[in-house]
Amino acid sequence: MTTYHFVGIKGSGMSALAQIMFDKGFTVQGSDVEKYFFTQKVLEEDGIEILPFSEDNIHEGLTIIAGNAFKDEHPEIKKAMDMNLPVIRYHKFLGQLIEGYTSIAITGSHGKTSTTGLLSHVLEELRPTSYLIGDGTGKGNPDAKYFALEACEYQRHFLAYSPTYAIMTNIDWDHPDYFKSEDDVFSAFESFGKQVKKAVFALGDDKQLRRLKLDIPVIYFGFGEDNEFQAKNIVKETTGSTFDVYRNGEMYGNFVIPTYGDHNVLNALSVIAVSAFENILAADVARELRTFEGVKRRFSITEKKNQVLVDDYAHHPSEIRATVNAARQKYPNRKVVAVFQPHTFTRTQAFLQGFADSLNLADEVYLCDIFGSARENRGTLTIQDLAAKTKGNHVIQEQHTEGLLAFPDAVILFMGAGDVQKFQAAYERVLDTGVELVEEKRAIN
Image (cartoon, rainbow, N blue to C red; front, side, top):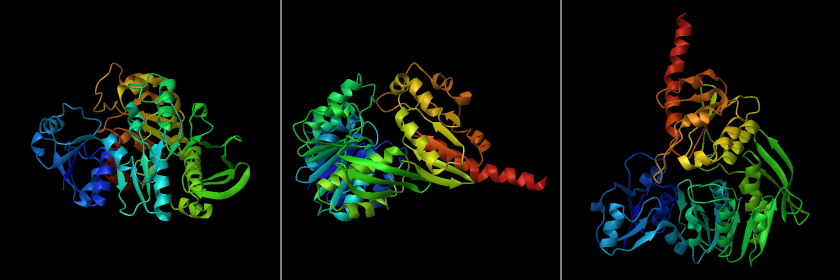
């Protein structure tokens, strides 16, 4: 039996796929940079070997799953090709893997991970389900009937999938290093929709998704009256949101979610719609929605020294706006401080004013240097270009986060798709040491 070797195993999708293959009984190993990523924790718990990148890792008996961040010239991939070992790109391998299941692919410019996590949580409790979530979480149930997967639109990778159903959460212009315009993004989504076998569930309040022309049914969900599944009578509280769902104008059920913001109501609505088409009882779905604890790096809360620290993946103006609004719902009486690390120079350049506008919805803004991805590690603009447009013109370094001490009782949002967690970790160390020292000085005086 072959051993599956994952080149770039710490990537969020790769980590999840490795877990799935491990659960299904295959021998799995992988390689990556030696820097710590949160995705490796579960791999290590499973005993999956993670090697430093080296062409010496490649030998007979391996099937290579290649992460999309790494080109064919990567030493391991190149050696595997030279040895005529099977080399399969991540998205193509996943496309083959989902055949034979009732597969539900979740895509959209924003909300993919949260929606995939929510759908996986609901389905797993009610039906045998395998799933791949973009926060690095995967499960390969040997008895699975369903397979829920996050489907990324970047470089049109999702065209490797022909799922039974698809959920489309929205269309927005993101990945400006690849997509030329919103129309370019739309064309990718419509092409993907043409590969879906049974039905597409799309946000009907999104003007781009309303343009879809497919040969299969497009089931629209949203807040508007013209949606087949409509959320109404929404009550937002500090514990979450409650809403009624109407299907074709008829009351379908009342639902409660322990998450915040309009975007999470819409995510839940898409899960309710898919479940209805699979004849899963509304009452069963409602019960499971109540117990969803969220996915990694999506409004993940740590409380420390009277401050609330939130780790969130928001890396686009629309996502920052949603995260700030969620914080306002859960913590209506606290000041909200945004700490943001832009992800990629092209995205920062393309959305410079949009980032400033969404960040300025917070009470205070602090910025970290731009994170250069594996694809792109330099650019012409600097973080100062964004700082000049935001409240306070603050830029912080990992070694100096103590400025955040000025906001006792605040909600501090650490947002970004890079390694903004290191700034939160540094600040937590300040809280664990610096605050205590300040309190000791006060006591002495």
